[in-house]
Image (cartoon, rainbow, N blue to C red; front, side, top):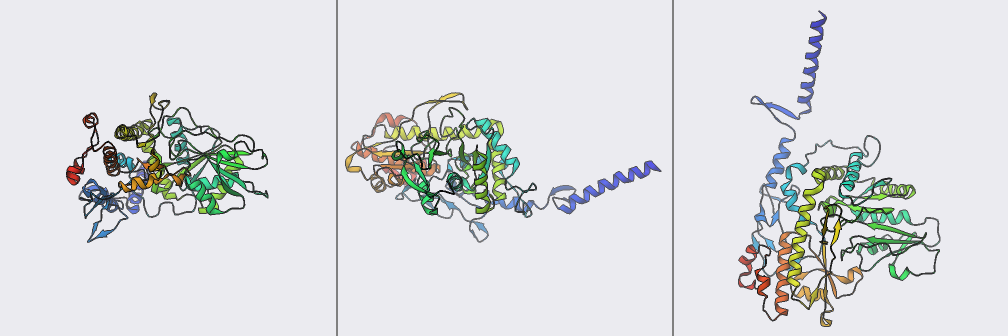
Length: 481
């Protein structure tokens, strides 16, 4: 009798488990086999949008426009039409923004492993089960990522999440500023510097801090009472230099912005080991629109102030964003990060080689020079491949370099926005392949005109980007590729 009762108990447990699966609705039994239930329609919808090719010059999105039941293509710069197949030969090469779309082909190759399918009831609470605002699994994965890449020491560091690096930059300024002083902290950066440092600090107009300009103005100051907060960008935006703090002493507090300190942009000579370091997935994975970054903080008091800032500002980073970051970083760390960083570095190295080759014959334009350095991540000596070309117009008559390039059909970012002089322009090399190809065509044409319309045969015989689609639209205009 006891054996019968035990068997019946096991059967009941199995039945209960089966019913739970059915009631949750994850799987349904159709035509003699189990099929995906609640997630099936969402997956089909995502697959349908992903299948829209847009002629390879655009992308359709789940949250994009839909016309007559079909998703609408969002075309790359210079392309238009329902399927992005119509090219405008007269359009401008738009290399102004820092949209990191050069990694898009990598994620297209890894669509399955990086995809997310989230139920409507996912993380509806304000906090996680431990009442915190950050995913502990994501925090541990970030520490693992830095250990793999070797670009930051996370031992003994606290971690704060933010909406990209921009939010964390101001949180750091807030945390490092005195809140019981009659004089605000002086915020500085070394020219050329990322414009947001100044614009964001000015925008908040806090009584606790104010932006006061270039770091060099305060290097030899005799004022030892002022609190100085220095933005240090390594690699630097716009010129790619691995900057270090200029100001020293107990009153100087650096904020290290390491948004670009990843192997596809620069060799990693050693782990960064500063007291306050800020990173972001924007330039790591290319997902700038997800708005996720993190700060590694040594001092507990600074950590608590930054955490309080985040709590009061937005009650922590979106739980959906944290989930996506977790999924993406799992792909990044797979195989110890080799795949994404090798893809990214190869892409950037190729773009730099072609740009340098195009400018080889020019005396009118130049870009920053980079020295090879040993990279601990790759175990090789590598040449930096910065996200941006810091282009300089060398001739006196071209001192308004932004206007010179704009007239030639190139839209960069004026050097004056980085507090540099107007002979400089930042050109983004991390946008789509279409954007880069059009830029390279315009640069080649400028250099060709500089040399009397004659092109070097040596350069013509060297490998270059596949311009077959450009030839279709430009015809005989494409003389200098």
